[in-house]
Length: 542
Picture 1 (cartoon, rainbow, N blue to C red):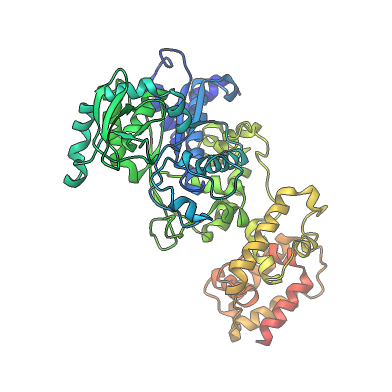
Picture 2: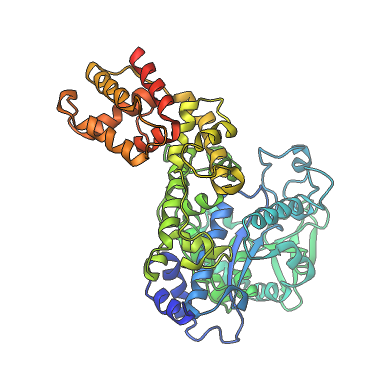
């Protein structure tokens, strides 16, 4: 496939990353005037550890970045785009997080810049922010993101932001005109676009500031002890209020695209007005909906009602997480462990289809975007395109459910030998990983809830008929033949099932202890005919 064919198809694609990327094409039809790369940005506040929200923002932004490259006929290695992961580590610490050790260290350093607070975890890092920044970078590296890390403290302290800060100082009154009408009366009394850092306490101060000389960068304010102070706002001696800082960053770095959550909608409007005052241009960007818990409530770090990356990766793959995040970013998503099995199952179905799809359908397939996000190629030529699992994740979960809470990887693989040729974990690493996920998910969430009911009189008769059919069949009987046999029993009038769904529901509830289940022919083939007959005997004994 040529780049021109991909470009032409991508321009008309209805997939949301291409729709977003086309906004950049319209912004700069011939590329940026100075020839510089298109700059994508994501932001991170290092007052806490990176989490699933951080992951989704970087991943979704990467989807748009790669979609833009496809449209303009560029490849990742061509350098036509950049992705900056920006850490706002000059922000003052406003409260002590609940999940941080040695909290007294943070308590005694409240309101100081995050990059000037000792690391409460260990002495390994220069500061609390440096520790969290290192965690962020390791977090992003783990998923193979291509990005440049930029630290606010480095930019402020080195003077790299000084010209932009002088610009802010020279437009101080204009920015106040934008911000003051949006604030409560009490907040207006102390609001300033510039937050000086106290020369005595090192804290970021929320006090009125007078601009003495914008060109020189000189400001005047009253320190915490009542002393009048005149000092530079440059070189790390001050930072900007959040909305002003966001706009200044867009201006200073030349950001072209940044998405953000619905909770920052008003901030985006105000920062957009401020960057225009500074002589810059608001980036393009998507406003995404927030994650919800299983009760439909907004996820909050302080409530602890969210799902961590580590939890998802215990029960599902990295690709399944990316797959779940991909669709409909403007719609709220419930994020809890219950969504993981379906995400794993659906990911593999879409991956299998990819190799057979025409290009326009590939560009709407989440797997195409996931593979390109990490530089893994694209479409039917991508590694793994068209792959399928010899056993579905749902079937694995049903098998492990029957084996019980103490099921092990080795035990599962011994049954997979009934169904998979050369059933060796080393030859099927992705399947082996899913076996581990299934064992963990069953242990923690399925096994405690399973309850096998007794069959009714007519269900018992149907089970006896199934047992009779299985008796004497060779273990090598094909899954499809077993499925046909199960169908035929369910259709027999003497058993009184209104439809096949009722028959399968009875099988699931009496044999597996679940309201839902797999194709029974596949399950019987995997679990073994003899073992299935034992399940039937146990059900009849109830």
